[in-house]
Length: 510
Image 1 (cartoon, rainbow, N blue to C red):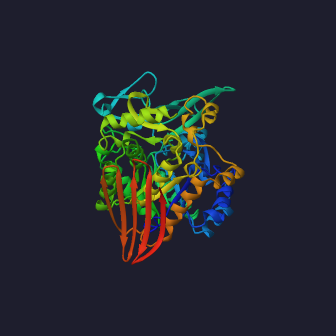
Image 2 (cartoon, rainbow, N blue to C red; image 1 turned 30 degrees about the horizontal axis):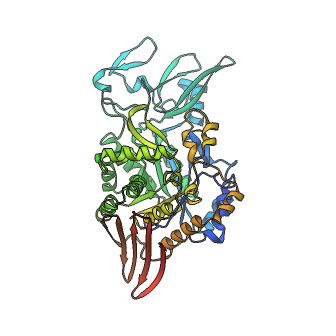
Image 3 (cartoon, rainbow, N blue to C red; image 1 turned 135 degrees about the vertical axis):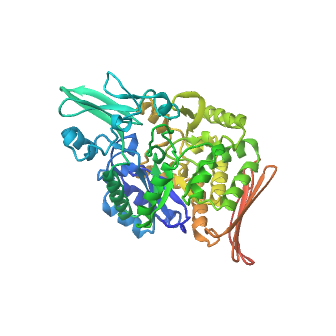
């Protein structure tokens, strides 16, 4: 993708439709979807991975159980470019680098590819009887950890020594047949030249797959320094991103750093100000709030900010994760955010608190359709608003098909399986049947509109206004104008695209 491509983007796992990436290619080749999507965001189970449905990457080769090169060529022939994930902070314990470390220990070429906890904290604390350094309070008090205790995995070297390595995210250790077994996500050592060689090879590989947009997952945890937060450290975070961007520029790749932070913190502004694309994690909650409170005030304010500040955003309604709530803090009053959470939970959603802190809202797991009370009119209005917001619209496949909360999938996933509520895999027959639904056909008409007219361009002038329950969003470029007028009191809206005095497209929901 180039920055000029702001056409709609479908978002799915490689096996979300038809069990393989070929099923998504089949779907996009259908006449009903021709012209609806300019891009496809494939989640990282596209690669070899072993946890977190793709986000624990073993290596970035194609997972041929789900995708082959021919699938990518079919997408390319359709003119569909790719958004792919690159996980900067960590790799699976099953990665060849970590397996080499386990096999060779001190003699491994990857001895410092991961972060030796004791080397990192040398001179900053006291050695414990368990064999790891306990950092002095002044070096650790501001650090943000994702789980209780120190983020350490004790790694057994071939000589029997236990060496602590930094492990921010998941870990599991057990004994089997007298051998230690591991599962987990091991932090990479950005001070190692081998890590930067790995970054360079990975970006080259992803570009070769047809990627144009690279989502940087967990990037904010990669730069670490004693006494700093261990999350969005400055200036280290920007130094790492700039170095990655120089590599990406050589392949025509645009970087999309992924981070959840409250609106009030202004992190999105900082990222955009440094020239990166940003995620619009605010839009999903703002639309639901507008429908619940029957006002477009906050939506109009946010659209104006994006347009006036020239922020290049990727926006969405639903996604593989939950509906963001933490992000809205500072943009909506706290009581309205809590009201949103209560409403979505009453409609069958599940609350995910931030790292186990029960007094902090983070996201609600639900399909967007169920979050809207499974109301076709509200879903179509939400999609229409998304089409007129500044940025590039990303569409979760299950939203397109008006998917409902999948409680059976949650139960099958067991404890902490709440995200599966919005990840239902569809057979090809399921998808074909749902294509006949009126709400699906109308969404496709809106998506095709967004890709068909020159007015929807990065250099268009975008304006937004709200009065009472009504919202007006307008795009203007040359002789073309596109106008959305919507009423959140009854979910009515009208769209018209004109060139000069000629009407090119109309769409309405009375």
